[in-house]
Image (tube, rainbow, N blue to C red; front, side):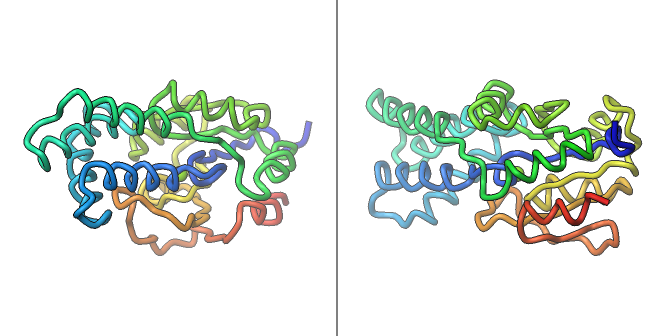
Length: 230
Ligand SMILES: [Mg+2]
């Protein structure tokens, strides 16, 4: 066994390993076209996102929250939700929940290489059933020694995550696209974070990158191989 085999590398999934955010933007555009064709998509998104924020503490991250958010947004825009509106929302959500899961460029080869040197743990947040289906559909599960679907990615969630693998908070090494979820809490705990930006960022996840020597910014997932291998 390689001496680094027991070193854990925690890796985010949505928009780090595969495209995710684009499908949500597509669903929002369809929602806007259907329920508020006279408004701009941006204005409809604002109402939708505001409504969704109310449901995140109750239902977490995922399609369920989107379903509730869309229902609440239609109620606000039209005064009520009828059976036809509910059926359309359901159709949008089911399409969203079943979107294609295709690893981003260079991801599979990189995971294959990294898994020879590190114990990889997939650390994603959201709905357990949705996330597990995506991992299965991606065909990438075989590269990970652990798959962790987290309710949220706060500092406490990372402390608990590390503890499950015997990793102290300051020894955490996390890779991900979201500054708010994958970078800030880990840096603040004294850990190390690799940030790989994704071109689409959900407003909820927007945050400024911290200034830290333990933050490494890279452009593509494949760059992890030369950054981490030795
Ligand atoms: Mg992500």
